[in-house]
Length: 213
Image 1 (tube, rainbow, N blue to C red):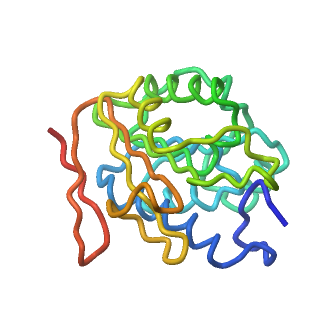
Image 2: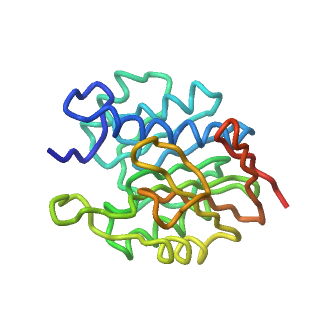
């Protein structure tokens, strides 16, 4: 069975799938040390927004499904959840971190470009934007997926709106995010900023350090 959103208490969703999703938020928390305002686009059930809040961010989570947002507000009461279509979201505030995990493929290509453009306008000069998407969207049986993002498509599309883009990969079996065998990995993790930056990998900790240039 395919679920549009991941709920950590849903026993029908595999532990491995949950591990992938949790690892992305853990990665975002580690790589962006300066905590401030965070926007969690397509936040779903809200577990990731809560992880970011516990790490020190002032988090706004946005999802189109009003029932999902209602439940998230009940479960994670210290996060500011809003029911809104991210395709119609317009720049109002500036954020230190914007996350957009496993959702870009749920939009049509042109709709995704609109979200990317607006995200670039909502990001602070030293803010970080992080996107994830599966390399193989399995659209033969996953009807929630509306677009496919290969390495070149995601790098060039994000690069049209941001100064610098770095692509990493995430492994299905281990959930590890790394810069090794990126094109053969199961998920792409794209990091973007409105200024030049680089990533330094700490092999022992399997984490990255963000280096502003």
